[in-house]
Amino acid sequence: MAVQILTKVLLTPVAITTCFSSQVFMRSSNLSLRSSMMTVQPFHSHNKNIMLNKFSFDPIQEQLFKENCLLVDENDKVVGYKSKRDCHTVVNNSIPLHRAFSVFLFNENNELLLQQRSRYKITYPEYFTNTCCSHPLYDHEDETKEKDNIGVKIAAQRRLNYELGIPTQEIGMDNIKCITRIHYFDKGDGVFGEHEIDYIVFIKKNVTININKNEIHHTEYVGMDKMEDFLKSLHYPITPWFHFVVQSKLYTWWKNLDQILNSPTDNVIHKF
Image 1 (cartoon, rainbow, N blue to C red):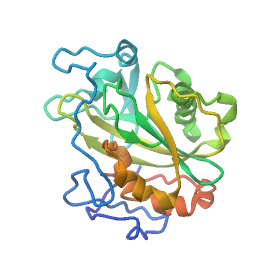
Image 2: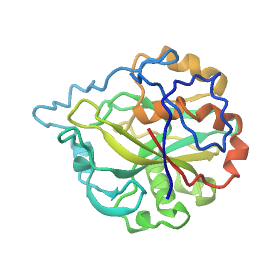
Image 3: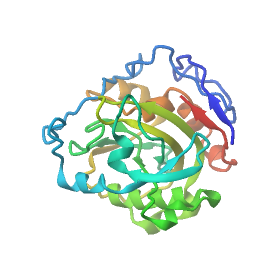
């Protein structure tokens, strides 16, 4: 399995001219998550219900933190499992590498559905991000399946239903397209962060939405021509994984959306 280290160069929507099939992702050499096109702040908890020193969390989110994620090596080979808590706890500036997915759902007008995470989330509360972000679980046998990325697709379908209330029958496996994978690390506030091989998943479908307020504070469809202004207008940060995708390939993919949805999956793991 190929793993590619990314060249560290800042890209803006205008500067992203790399062909959608390219294996090169690029980012800022002094990446601070506060760029000229968006407002992004260092990770800290906005949630008054979360007291990190006492480790007192929302009870629903605390229960979800007990679920088991799939540990992987740098080639995305499963090597074990650990709880979500363990997979997001920073120890000596290190976090276990685990498998994740990030869904980008577009409607038939090619508008992208974004969400603001709820204040109850343990990691990145109230951050803006793409449609849905989560993990295939060791606890769900179907989500450990590798062939045709079916495990990731099943997990994505499950979380779209849980977070956004999208009926499972509205999004079939044929509607879910794994575009590529990224490998990134973000130590968050030094207590909880992320270290993931993240499957970038695209869906184009009009869907019914009924958000779970414990997961999501707000959702909004945004067109490609409005995205830059939308990000600039935010008073909350965006998640690091969403930042990496926006600053690298999102606009190129978006411009070629129908072609991307019908192209083979990129098998390179792009490393930030």
